[in-house]
Length: 270
Ligand SMILES: C[S@@+](CC[C@H](N)C(=O)[O-])C[C@H]1O[C@@H](n2cnc3c(N)ncnc32)[C@H](O)[C@@H]1O
Image (cartoon, rainbow, N blue to C red; front, side):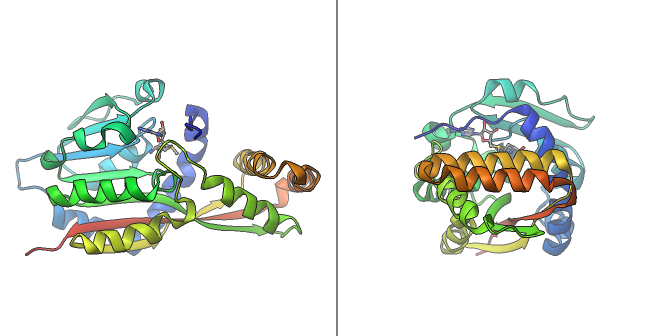
């Protein structure tokens, strides 16, 4: 098992691409209307749990869409990231909680929440943990908004002959244990949806793809994919390094679409 750590720099680099992708998904999900329908009674602030919040990008994107007073419980196991969360705007309060979501998921105050949310988390988790999450949320009949789960698509323009091999090695590496059991990677949403429906949720999903055309994020992704491919298949070092070199030399002329999905789920009234 490798416990993944995420640098604040990496989270900052991806934040504008996450936000643009989520804006598009929100339109397809009709998210503003859906959230309005889920809003707590007048005079009651939204109480939101943000799982694996990092430096708070999910909160920064979602808070303006919830409208009105809000209380956020920001949960992560990395104290350094929690300390980087800026103070929110007026009317929004937040509490930072350091917690290992593998060990202590069930300890969260599910029954007090109006919404449970996470971004860029689900592909790190395993099947058993995903079912624990669904069980905890269903027992409290709380809606979920789970954003930016990778779906395995990497569409490079222009294409390179090594894209398929490096992409497959990267996908295999993504399924390694990240601290939540063998990771679901690109299968996360496909595993989540039936579990939610079985637990009595109505579900909507929409693509939230990154459209990457800046050198800094492209280089970071190229290097990350190459390193993962090397770890996954050391005997293919020459092929992976060759792909990395060719991709880096073309970076200013490259566009990359990285497939993600956003899921909104709310309990069916009985
Ligand atoms: C890809 S980052 C996403 C951060 C943030 N949600 C965002 O969208 O910027 C994954 C986050 O999961 C957190 N994480 C990983 N394993 C965890 C665990 N066992 N318990 C709590 N948080 C964990 C990391 O610290 C990191 O902040």
